[in-house]
Length: 231
Image (cartoon, rainbow, N blue to C red; front, side, top):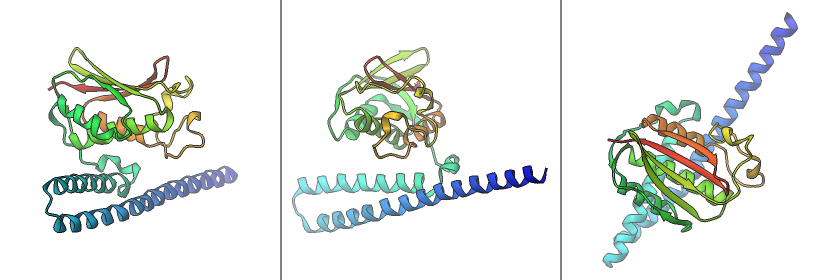
């Protein structure tokens, strides 16, 4: 029994060390990301004060807005550890689906979305969190598929469903159920940067908004499906 107790104690210590290491990694990421964002904001603030061109001022204001959003997301996600996700503020409210269309194109900086067919309706969502979710899905597609992305939508009883599909070959059938788990990455992620938390956080946030995120292979690639509650 003494040997068993020692083994259990050693196992707990290893687990605590692993959790501490992950928390430290997240805190370090937070610092590393927030520092350049602060520099960007300072430069933009200076340029806004020194330019008279209204077009440039509008562009700078947009950059500042995006930098603020990044700063807010980093503070929420990385400064708070993943084990404390419940502390994230989620304010789900009525949101016109046309705003989802805007979010998709704003997130698609590589212009891979060839179709975004979002039907007109009102969903229950937090816009900031929806920006996170869509950004994570599109970023994953860039990283692991690097193909065109098609976005389609449909109604299903009291839900509104939006599907993001690529043609990158998908994920192994033995791994498809694991892609939304924390720190889990498929074999197709080998050699590519990433932490394995994007879809995990997205799934959590969708559930906090009363919705759902599911993933599947579509024959040609990978599909991430968002299910929203209709307002």
